[in-house]
Length: 117
Image 1 (cartoon, rainbow, N blue to C red):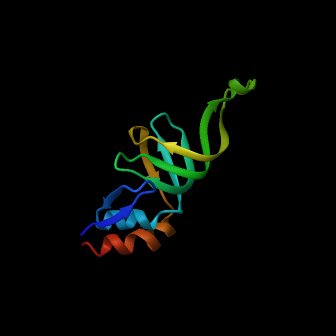
Image 2: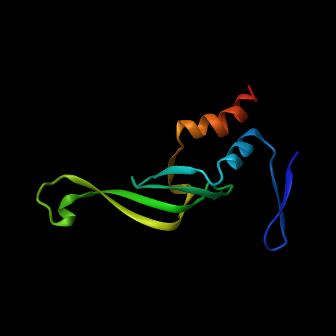
Image 3: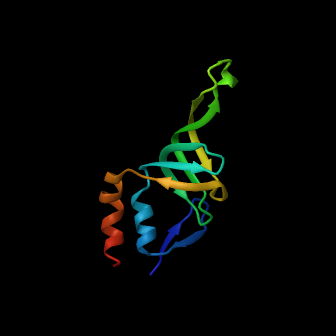
């Protein structure tokens, strides 16, 4: 049975009452690390996810690996460039991987998904 939710502008939509949806709902506000297809990562608190797997994170930190010569260094090593973002939208079509801590998984996801088996 699906839950009917009221959107901000008066339209309604249905959230399927599946274990996967309940597990995702339990992760709202929790910290995720998303890897994009260009190698960047964004770590932040889950605000929402849609049917196209677009993810919005708040208090996000973006990390990308840059050749140190970009920063006028002669070492030729790769450095991690970080920037803080109040919010970040990760397009689902560029999403490669989503990670959560093992503790979060055990507390918020595993109990729901193990009831399915």
